[in-house]
Image (cartoon, rainbow, N blue to C red; front, top):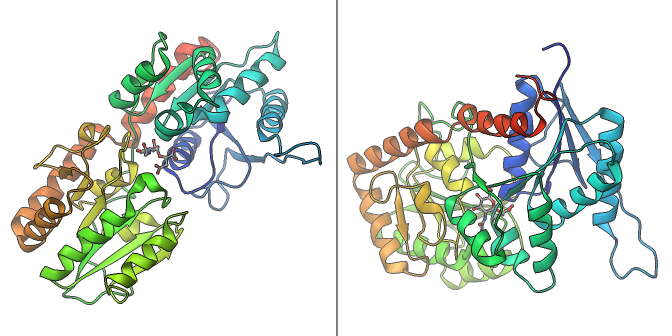
Length: 380
Ligand code: GMT
């Protein structure tokens, strides 16, 4: 490749799944020779250290007494325009519709008559919880319609977008992915600092929002704890954390539940998990469950949403009503008590990841979208 392909990536930098997918995508593209420009308000969580071909452009916004809120969308549009102009972006890929697809539209108009092709990836709550609100519905629909290409992380989310917004344009499904060399089963079971050898390790990671239904994680763990020695490791932080701590106290589980906060290095932690719990109210894909599966850890996930496209129930994991604690507790205890069954489910989970959701397979799909969109501009 004589000259590099250049992509701008807009995402939320926090621990949510959309930011993680966007960051891992950018890093993978950089490893394939792309020049990657992250544009967001803080350094993305998984963007650690210095990588060649990777640049981070911080969006700063100013406030003024007449504004009730700092106008982030406008500052983002300005930064996108600035980066596109200075670095000659071939394509701009925004993750999470609100307000990123809208800022992209503005930047694209400002860039005329030069071309700035925009790909929007829908991740889940941007459609199911935020975009559908009356205050955002019209602009979400408009921004989706105006993007040059739109992808969604599951068939479920594609369908939801069509139903909720009546959009008629094509939406392509490109699933979440993992690097299976990074997220892999450990050769030898390493115990997290806090656990004893006879204890089962149960893990949940999220942004602790109501949609994650943390009480079901804790109640299911309580069922497991009644049957065997076990620890629950909770990774992440968010508005439900205090409530979760209170519930842990009420159930007398303080010694068995650890709140680890927002962490990098999930691959190491998931490598020692015996079980991963994701009983969300709904989940458009469930990236963290995929990462656990890649590590060979069986998952019990919500049956609501797109998780059925990730987990084959009873084979590579389990899908349950997220409020059916008895059912989740029963499945967890049976699985954790049956070493052979546990091994088979973990192996099947890893196999499914290798077949369908590896970084190589999925990045190639995004590159194909960029190529189709830009014609000659993006080189193979
Ligand atoms: O729910 C989260 O963890 C955050 C949210 C986000 O947008 O940052 O995650 C959504 O995007 C992930 C990556 O595509 C998906 O794997 C999650 O399923 C999705 N969350 C929901 O649908 C609730």
